Image (cartoon, rainbow, N blue to C red; front, side, top):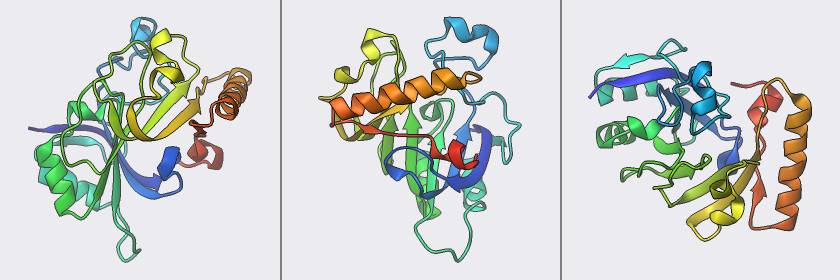
Length: 217
């Protein structure tokens, strides 16, 4: 199959248990919960996305006709001679619409440890080294195990409350304050709510988008 990629770039992971780790971000185009068009946001299953995943026009983006060519492009963003195991974060949009066994094998062959950031509505294929699930609203959750559950908080839907997920098979549980684009006061209020929730429910840890704080992509 071919792969539609919005962008590929090298940065530090800003969120969750791997925060601060150097990574190549492989952002796939497309999502199954929102078209990415503002006119459709109000009727989308996920209405608070702050990521541009539409098209293939970002840095390093394009259509890749084979898993090997895409893995080669990802490898080209990792610094040579820097030490450490190469690490790629497959994200989107929804990466599990495209991330398949062929690409997993090709990325492993290129030496990469593979992480995925998924909304959990699709089951992850075998071989992914780090699975981060971020449930969205009332969308059904198919991927109910992994390394990290990262819940954007607060969400109004009863199916998206933290207590709904505490018995699932994850190693780490994070709440991440919802970033309200263009409304700093609302964003700050969400940070306060998330921090208070973690203090009251210590199974959960606070995940802050540190890349935004320090000015990285």
